[in-house]
Length: 396
Length: 190
Image 1 (cartoon, rainbow over the protein chains, first blue to last red):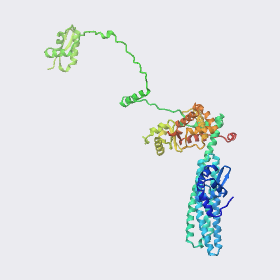
Image 2 (cartoon, rainbow over the protein chains, first blue to last red):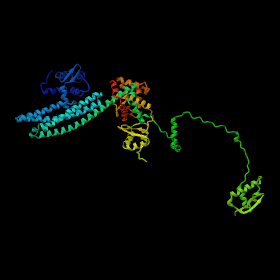
Image 3 (tube, each protein chain N blue to C red):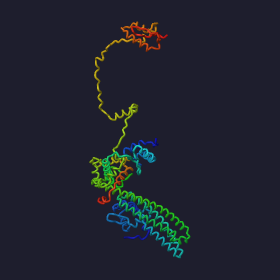
Image 4 (tube, chains in turn orange, red):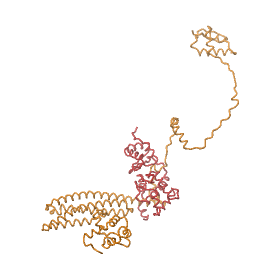
């Protein structure tokens, strides 16, 4: 394997092969990159150079980027998905060491050098912690949503919970470092920039702690959901098994549970038919609905109309019949014009047909009752053929 | 006269047929009915109680039960319950994360038949209910049953995408309510 002699060499090589490297970096998670793809992007010699310098590693027909470079790019681009608690730990250790060196060093120039490193460490620690928390949260949600196997899903989430715990401890360590362990250093060094950086770090740590509390809640909720899902899957598996073995009724309380169940879900769908009121049927609206319904039934066959029986010939031939009747009004009017009494008038009246004595007496009574108001009934009674009658005169 | 909200008749009409009213339905009318019940739950519960019905509130859905004796025979209940165990089991085999809000198409289930023999076998057994030999038609029939009972709805007609409604939890609860004694659980192998 070849080694680079200088940074300049390295940067030139990277710049020269940037198309392939950026392509491979983008695809690092999606699929295995093949050698044949690489030689289409970049000429063979340049690909070989990358392999010779150990930037790329070739396994038969596959190419991958060396871990060192991949890690470097991910860190610089802040796209690392992995939560690296050890890295934070190391960062804190570095910080402690540098503080220690600073305090022990007498040479002012070297002191300043350590102080610069301390400042740089403080700046990165906050950023690294926050970045790790963001990755953690993203990983938690992704795992919950995409991992198909619920047992693995639960294990992964539990692992993330451990990482969360670890990050929480690191936050605590960092805070202790600033406010307790290295108090001497932070109090004694009168550097405004250091004060500002450590203040900012404390704010970041506070923010990180709040974020982690949220993460913890999220993990607990997801784990509970997964456990419930697991229980449901286990229960349905067992219930289904017993059902298929025809043992569900005898071995479980299903009969009792369903016996007590009053849910309408289990009933046949009931409808409540209400006949339409006759009044409603007579409206134009109802008529239109009936016509529509009739049309929708699409009856091609028209109902056969029953023919009525022929009309009887006898019914059509007219039969005249004459009936004699007495017009009471006419009789009364003629009586009013005379000065006679009603009984005598009727007895003498000349009808077109024969009217006997008794019919005439009846007529007397009928006219009397019909036109009572126009007649004057006197107290004078007379006898005729054994009939006693009151003398009735026109009421003038 | 008790003060009941508007649309009480529609609410009664649906619930008294054994339907569910779910919060996550895409139908605007159902959403409106859900909101009405949600706001006036106590009033409606009291009102329906007077005519012999028990309005029940569950997690994001409502349904009705009778206050007196159920009108369904125990045989009918068991038959219906067993049918839904089979369908629930089939759906959970298709995807164990299936839950309210889950979206799927007939094709997705159909495609999975080829890679999962277990699913295919279960579908074949479901032909007792679907009376279809053709796999696709059989799946369609099952989804139709889900929709008819109000456990799912066709969300996008163009894409043929269905959505599982909140009432799906009713099935889950019905299954979780069965108590299998420990010794029986131990008998059932993994």
